[in-house]
Image 1 (cartoon, rainbow, N blue to C red):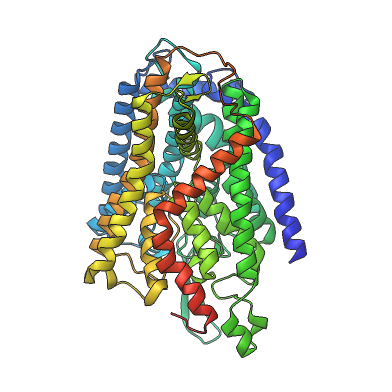
Image 2: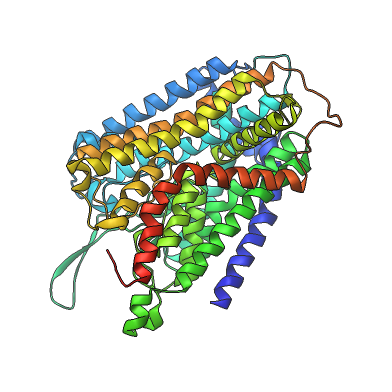
Length: 567
């Protein structure tokens, strides 16, 4: 275990070191400045603008930016839905998979467009190669780029004044794909192929087992999808068991770098904040708040998972260690580290079964997702979410001292506070309401494989994963039913649009305001006090909102497990 902990430490050091140049690079990308890739990428960029009749020099007010953002996502849902329901008539379907049922197709379309990548299906038994590539992989790129574009537009509201313009959605989207996601994914895909991740268009391989039975081994263009699913905080495995599958994650080295890939861009965005605003210390303050919350959750999950299951201890099995649902190639620490990484971001990929973790380790994952995945979070939207908490914290402090709250030189008025409350509260209310409906109706309980508090946790986690645009699951719950497919669609839409739209509204409002110079009454947002206030605000809001749900779920299960009862 000690060597695994050293590996985690090395990973975090490498990530921080890489985040600094990447954060500075993002400033060039979204500032429209030349980068080291401009010479090779700019012809493709100009081609897309010309093909789409886009004036790259035109700036948009927030209303137009929001309109184009919504239209693009709507068309993405429609196109991906149609690809699935007609996949039996489309090429690159060597296994002759049938059309995807409409409710599952809608769920999957909304899932990938909202960067959730929730999967109520097994990829290797449901989706054709064309659907995987033209549908799912394309959305892995553009849905991540949308989140990054929204964050860039949000930050422009802090640096601009006396204007309605917050950027050009199509330019931000294009540059995010061409200059950030595509280069990183190409390099990472080549590395994955070198480790043994499959990348082929050949049909599935048929072999004869030692029992003289025929077995079909699923293959396909996996490496390209795995690369962008990790780099873009997408999640969504090519194979049903995700990154515990040896064709997705074959070696300890691939496991190490796939975990790093999950966190790389989210680590860079607080650095991007500081460099973009020319307030480097403020960026590091947000980074430190995120890192503290991440390490506290990781430490708690590692502690309780390493304690094992007392029932197994009493039975003398494996010294009580809880290896159920974990890949023996990786063990406890890399599995818990991946769980923490994938739930503090909107990645959702797994290398172990979250349903099999100890109750408190499962609680940590639930908390990470339910608070809006602001502890680094998804690419772009994680930083947006943390800044919502920063606005809320400053508003509370402003009430205490009788001053108008201010963040990064902009006064925060009633409109900003309303949008912030909508972005924080509306997803939470939706999560609790959908969970309540599911546990109250027979159709919601029908998919459970576990009773008691663990069954409740499975339902709560599913809707938290949808609201948080995460995509991971307590997979003891069968969700490929019309009820869950459609209610999870509602959860994913609320989680995505109730975060990005308020952020863009705030950006438009702030861009019109003058920049206020700091004075003696301004709360320093680069101080240890601010870092502490920000951490406390995130924890307290999460505790107040979800404490009852956590109590009747993982907390109750923990105490019953120590008493010798399982579910």
